[in-house]
Image (tube, rainbow, N blue to C red; front, side):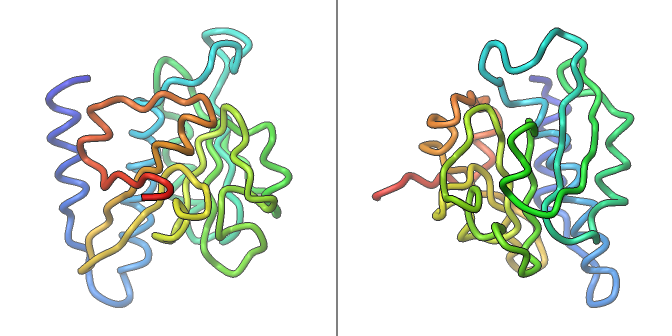
Length: 179
């Protein structure tokens, strides 16, 4: 997409987070910004949305620490679509979601793509742990030296019939299953 977006996304990925007390809040701010931008660079399968005005259903599974930050993107638009933010308790409830964000807080189903380990078609799954992509999730946040980065499992994205822009892939650490 635009050069300005890439500069902003690179800036976010290089953002140093404040120590201790503000770390979690700042981390969630950065993650919310990433999620918003992920939605701009993913192409869902034909027929996923009823029409061009259908909102993106963004579901949060586990933890409430990010809910306020995620709600801050609810009024923004990605690909001409607004966001509907839902908080759900379990992965099996995510079938209607376009984006499912699994918070690593010990909630059942947060360690892989879903409780069953299967990647649902047309659902961009995002997790809070580096191992999330190894369990079949599509994108995993990785915090290293207080920097938020991300990994993308391209095989899981293919199974979900999602096309991820090469511009986004260039910024990610790529994970391929079985390699």
